[in-house]
Length: 77
Image 1 (cartoon, rainbow, N blue to C red):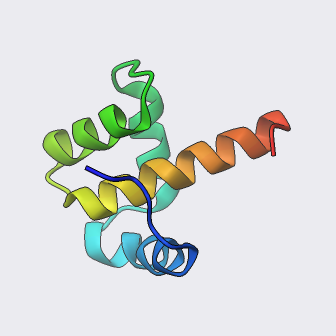
Image 2: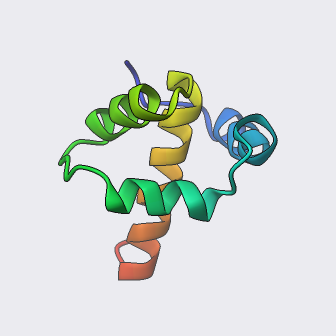
């Protein structure tokens, strides 16, 4: 599974997450933080999709956004 979306597609997917999943991004970020300690983003996306019944596209978008915000908080961007 590829975790590479165009920036436009990433933004569209992220904007739809609450409507499609019924959960806001902070809730998904908490699920990732409380989930297994996978090192790779694709492993986290696969787990999120399998554990929570998400499509891989939405799971990947959530993981990418989680990583982006985490890096931003840590000053890595």
